[in-house]
Amino acid sequence: MHVSYFTERPYRWLDEELPLASRSFFGISNAHFDAQHAADDYNAFLDEFVRAEELGFDGVVLNEHHANPYCLGNVMNIEAAILARTDAMFDQLDAELARTNGPWFSGASYGALDPYVLMLARWSRGFKRPARTLPHLGPYLQRVLARPATQRVFEREELAQPFV
Image: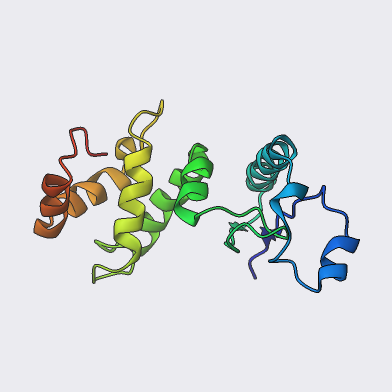
């Protein structure tokens, strides 16, 4: 069994009668939104995710509900990149590659997860311990970067070295 941490990350400053009165939580005016309260909440929720990881939860669950009042969730790759600033996530990815001993995260075949991991690793390139320095992630990332399709994308986007 795996135990994960999840929260909808609600905007906590909205009068709960407002959506009941309008019979909708999507049609609430931005006049009821306070950017500073939202920023404080958003950072607190990210801190909660990091704390859940420190406490040993098997995973943290991110969700995207397009920033309605009941979920301050952002685009998932942005949140994952923020949370990737913790070394533990890269350690888990490295351990999973060691466990499966496959060239790719899905095993023998390149899959949808592989470019996602590449982008997470790319965002780590300025960290004190970038993903490329880990014993299994480093060679894995070189395999992803060696793929012709990956090279074409990096060339077309004019991305500079270091790629990861």
